[in-house]
Length: 146
Image 1 (cartoon, rainbow, N blue to C red):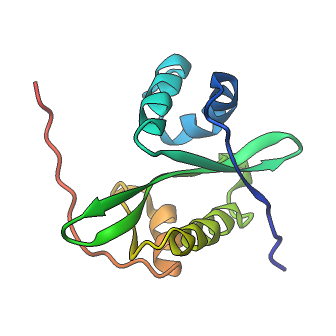
Image 2 (cartoon, one colour):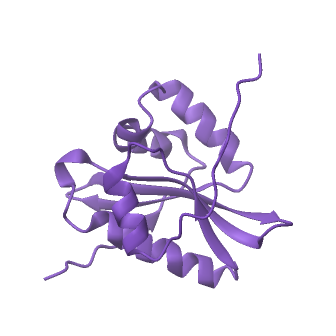
């Protein structure tokens, strides 16, 4: 039986609320310390970034970070920057619950598509994305500028 989880949007205008997200985000973004995480979130919020999360017993156990963007190639899309489930809560349906919520937000926000990038090594995440109707549609390339 699938459990239903309530998804809440984090009030990112307060650094303490962002700080509460750090533990779960650190599993996906281990290169960031707490202060750098807060700083980056605050910058991204000014660019439209939103964090949604699932709490269990007062603790954030899963989170998604997303923003709406416009592209010549796709039009208005919802870009999913981050989707994280606490490692001790994997396989509890949290990722799927967040994904369903994000898909609904894309519809509510009149987006034509939902996009994300994922690391090659994240096989569990790939399974979740493919099971939720995503297509492997492009390669994302990057280059350090220095």
